[in-house]
Structure formats: structure tokens, C-alpha cells
Length: 122
Image 1 (cartoon, rainbow, N blue to C red):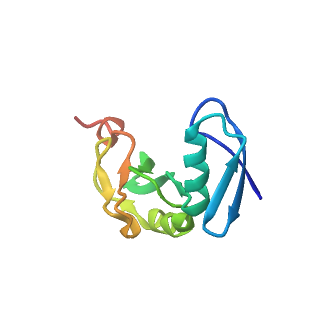
Image 2: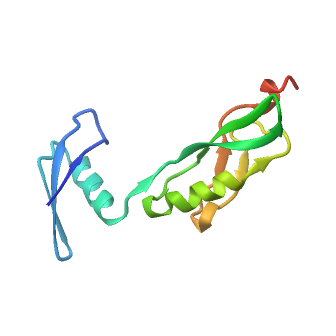
Image 3: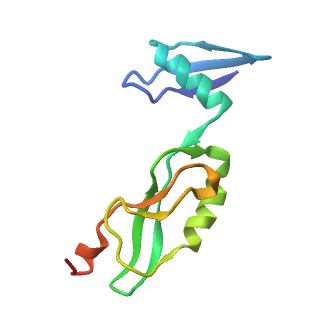
């Protein structure tokens, strides 16, 4: 049996999840969303990732980035290696893609700040 704390709604239910073959039994949920959360978390856990990437600008050596969707939890370490290899050589605007379709997940890595403003540009 696995115990999870549901993060879908403010209830924060302490779920008990048991996998019996192809069936997944969820207990202690106060709403149906807890069941969906527990099943997804058991079968295919995914996460959003936030980090920073390096730049060539001494005044702004790193900038914050994030995924614009969720990736499989099993790919986070590989994604971090990819993120750590990126070095931005021009100013990006907030929301602009710095790496498209990371690890063939369909998820992009985007900048979460406006570098132009931080570097004193327009």
C-alpha cells in the first residue's frame, strides 16, 4: 500500500493507494479528483520543472526558466542535464521558448522573466 497526500484541492486528503493487478483502489479521498490524482500518480507521475539557465551576460549570469507543461517524473534528471547545457546568447522575453520539445516530451523550456528589461534594453 502507498500513501499519498492529494494536492488537487485544499482538502489535502491522505490517500491510501493499493494496486491489485490492473486495478487501483484508492481510499480516504473526499472527492473524485483524489481518485484521479492517485491513479495518475501511481501509473504515470509527472511534474513541472523550474530551474535557471546560464547566459553570456555578466550583468545577468543566469535567468529563471520552467517547463510549459509536465514531463514524466522519470525524465527529470535527464531534463536537468539538458537545462544545464543551455547557454543563452541573446536577450529573451518572458514566455519565449529557449528549447523546444525537450526530450521528445512535447514540452518546451521557457524563460520566466524579461531579459531585455533586466539588461536595460527596450
